[in-house]
Amino acid sequence: MAGKIPDLNATVRAGTGKGAARQARRDGMVPGVVYGGGTDPLPINIPFNDLFKKLKAGRFLSTLWNLKVDGHDDVRVICRNVQRDVVKDLPTHLDLMRLHRNTKVNLFIHVDFINEEEAPGIKKGGVLTVVRPEVELNVVAGDIPEHLVCDLTGREVGDVIHISDIELPKGAKTTIDRDFVVANLSAPSSLRSADDEEGDEVEAGDVPTTGDEDAAEE
Image 1 (cartoon, rainbow, N blue to C red):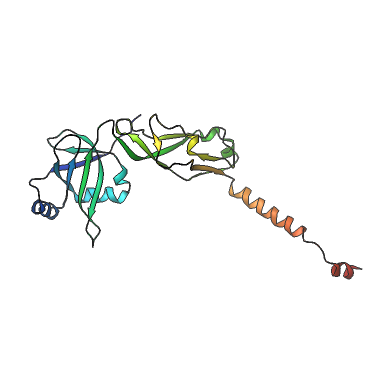
Image 2 (tube, rainbow, N blue to C red):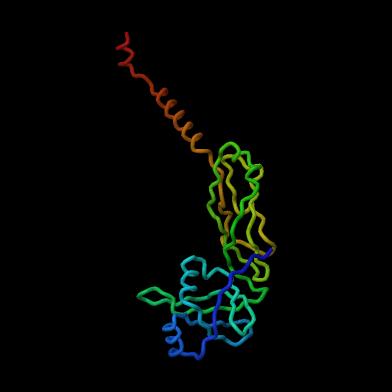
């Protein structure tokens, strides 16, 4: 099931070249260009504040965007480059590439954990520790999953959940070529503390007595 693709709003930039780009920046816009898809490049402007918020949120270059430009059909794009000011590190230009439905892209997909009530380990007070709330997948642009599902049914304390335990969408694969950990179910802190105290008592009781101590008792 495809997830909702976030919108990226832009306007057509009048003119090209350095002069038009400088004017766009003076107007509080970030100039950019949309290319690919068998169509001519389209010069655009994106409101600086809007773009800055999206960049600050992270994953901008690995997010599929629904580009909305007045007078043009919506198109799916992915950002291939963001140029920044060398001193202020603020965005000054960006390149967007149009995608066909069968184009493959790398995107971060959220992991949903379900059926916690069916996990004996959680019923005993175990704690679910999520190592990777998102997993980067290579997916087809026209069939992007909304999320991945990790079923916790039957999970016990001490269980480790790997990516191989999660069913991936058809045609999708991870960008990391190993069976990495997604989450684990650890013992409750109270149980860990009790185990530590018990271990301390055993260690104290196991300290051997010396011959001098035996002589003193006699």
